[in-house]
Amino acid sequence: MTHIEVWLGDITTLGYDAIVNAANSSLLGGGGVDGAIHRAAGPRLLDCCRTLGGCPTGEARITPGFDLPARWIIHTVGPVWHDGAQGEPEQLAACYRNSLTLARANAVRSLAFPAISCGVYGYPPALACAIAVRVCREWAGAGAPEVIRLVAFDQQMAALLEEALARGGR
Ligand code: ADP
Image (cartoon, rainbow, N blue to C red):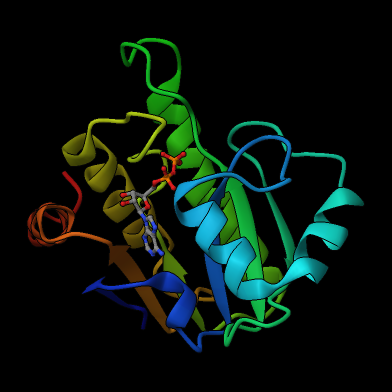
């Protein structure tokens, strides 16, 4: 069984098998959680990301965690929110699905997600939380990580994730 939980804190501190990075399509670093992950993982992460040639929205790529306590980093590129009718929900769901696919392929047993697209990409947090919970629940079970931690960086996001989890992602 997969245990899905909400946690308030800094994703870069987690000694998990893998943490997910809300990257941009260049994969060359940025602000927010991406900047925090690059700072904590050290310069070898940027060297490694340069070899990947970027990543389209909705897809995911995996690198080592380098100086992070996490073994792997799964980089995924969330959609920029426009009005919700430009494929944003499908793209955000694809981020979670493709990250979980890479996690399974790499035998990841503990996986942590930040609130993809909920920072500078402007996705309405309540809508994003429902998608995060729904896709993780669909995946729970065979081949999925034993623990999926949905990481909030502030109290408001933690409350929204808890609500979404209580509603089962509906
Ligand atoms: P995006 O560009 O996908 O919107 P951001 O990094 O701007 O990505 O924000 C995504 C979410 O990650 C936001 O909710 C933000 O508060 C959160 N966040 C920022 N830094 C961290 C961190 N160190 N650990 C966990 N979450 C973080």
